[in-house]
Image (cartoon, rainbow, N blue to C red):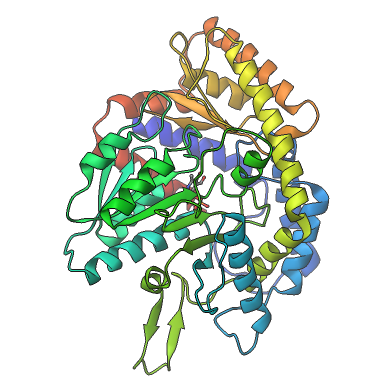
Length: 468
Ligand SMILES: Cc1ncc(COP(=O)(O)O)c(C=O)c1O
């Protein structure tokens, strides 16, 4: 199957769906009535909602309870105009942000929190998502290194670290030195140690990693960083709001947060298991000096004195208010109860996957269930799952897919539906010929085609997404 066939398939998937609602490729000469516009919005939302609401998505919607969603929407609506860039107009926005940072830092054992307090140890900001938090931390380490005379700073990370680290390296001219992982997909600590050079500014570990949900050996990684006097960034975007409760529930969670003296920064997403609306994350630092490297100030700009703490200028105060509302309304008890349900559902799913002879569970994860196989084409299994409505994440090196377990999967019967569909799909794949449709051909191509070709295909894919 060629790249063009694959793009044609994507166009076919998107087109009928897009055509069902009136298309706008220019601003209408006369504005439509609000009722009509809301009806258009609602018709699309109603069509998309059942799939994630019924737990067919991996990750993506981490809470999704109707009442909670309504609550977040109300919190957003109350502060929809707010912008923390104007603290004179919206001091509440700065309050919400500072408190989201403080609550998150405290959850991750940053006991002395608060930007302005004397002796504060953990400081940080609210960003728009995990990727931005990671970009900011990498920018901070780069400039921390440059301030120490390192002309070409390097960051050492396991290959399983999120693509956002590659993006940071690409954007900011950092050299990302990637090392391998062990049989359980955890960073190879000795390889990390060996990869440290005079130019290394930081080591990275995930808690847990996106692909396989593996928690890297953070204590060992942080110890190397401490010994070398460099940074250690923990990417807890996915696990930061689950692992503290998992630990209290007695699950095996090695220390990964500010309890470890070598951990200098953490990225942690409110918009995942913090159950906030999409568009917020937190980046935390043990040192104010590091934090200042992510901030920007213009002192002689004709537009006035300008200072901002994250990549954006104006920021969505409404989303920060909604994140604050989520933390305050959920409370430790709520997070603990959610973690308990999610981890129990994940345990049932992991056991069910292990019981399907053709499949294997990759590594020893807590709540991200990555599935591979030595006997069937897992991408075809994933395609058959897609045909049944599931939206799973394809992985490669090795071939696999995963389900990040959320509250949606903890609802009655969802985990069981996943497992029975999975067993049925394995049977279908064993007894039917391969198809040209789906992700299997794309991953098949990616496995053999030169990198530039696949890169070109992904760029064309982005273009297709923007077609009206
Ligand atoms: C471990 C990890 N880090 C970073 C990210 C990036 O987060 P976002 O998609 O919010 O930018 C993700 C997203 O799933 C993740 O799982």
